[in-house]
Length: 259
Image (cartoon, rainbow, N blue to C red):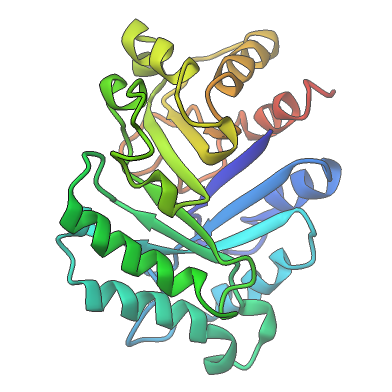
């Protein structure tokens, strides 16, 4: 089991320490971390120096992969702007003269969920910019449509009628915990036609759960996806801007409930 972590937390002194502690104490867990200093790579400007100081520290952990954030606005953003964002992430090591700023891939946010040929070609071009060459260490691509309807997830022709074959991971569900529990969503996610290793589930607004119940929730998410992120933060637009009180327990649950 692995964790897909939207690290949209400003790296003030000590702010990222929960991640460092978790990565050190749970070396068997893979953390794929999304870096997002300016709703993207700060193209046309310089990121705050604290980012340039802190991001290289992530590279001291062998179980942390870093992805640069790029929004596509559901493919309404000009493809040239998307490619410019990808290029900006790729250029960070050279521009800021630090090889430890080299990211391992790109997290494309706000991607479409319903298949469309023009959108497929758009995303194919964006993904190729990451996959081709050696500008990204792992050439890793993640799409986040946020939600794939049960009818899509259950479609036997899903691979032919989706963008999943363009990605290493697709976030098939980013929603509240309550919506995850709805029968149509829960059943579809647990019986997806795609192998778990290519799927991620992100749940926010979790209620107050005991560690035992949290272990059970993680087990249920595992039935549908290899990658997960859970938080009990309930304030819109703040879900990923802080480490929630349950972060450490979530990591332990992912690591087999280890105490």
